[in-house]
Amino acid sequence: MKKITLCILAIFFAIGLSAQTHFGVKAGLNFNSIKDISVSKENVSWNKTGWHAGVLLQAKLPLGLAFQPELLYSVKNFGAGDHKFDLNYFELPLNLQWGIDLILLRPFVMAAPYVSYLAKVGGEAKKWEGVKNLDYGFGLGFGLDVWKIQITGKYNWGFGKLAKVDSSDWKVNDSTLKVFQLSLGLLF
Image (tube, rainbow, N blue to C red; front, top):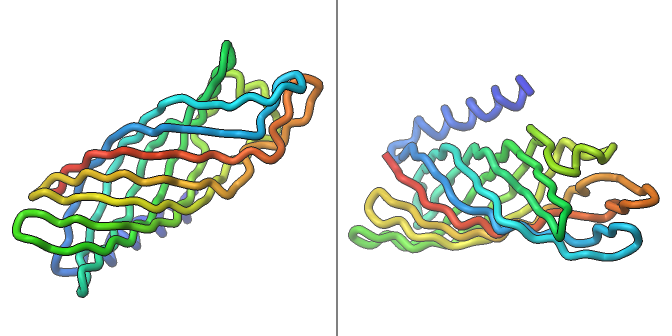
């Protein structure tokens, strides 16, 4: 964990040397979905809304590009019926944005690989053995910078398997998380 923290700080410092950088804070909602979980041999679709909050650093590059790494605390919970699961992650998305700078407005599209580290397991997921601590994936989205406010929407596809649980009640072997994040940020 110390090596990851040092790498994150080095990235933020290197980007901070660039001329047009903005530090910011960000928060929003996670619309989570997960498939391929079965309870007592019955397949169920799992959806629930969570939240995320954290910090960002935006470095503007030539040709309308910007690089925006973020460090977020992200609650990815899901459930169906009486079953509730809470998975809380520290998430590091590395957003590459391409947009058009207008006077007070900058619409953009973005692509972002990300890596997440599981910080806390809650709900019935506590009963699972073999929950993976590391998740990774890729996100695509769009956004709008209006003066010092940033509004973004991004869909993240998780590639890492959630857990390896195959008991008489639960089967969670091939499940991955999919999350649509709607965020509001403030740039300084």
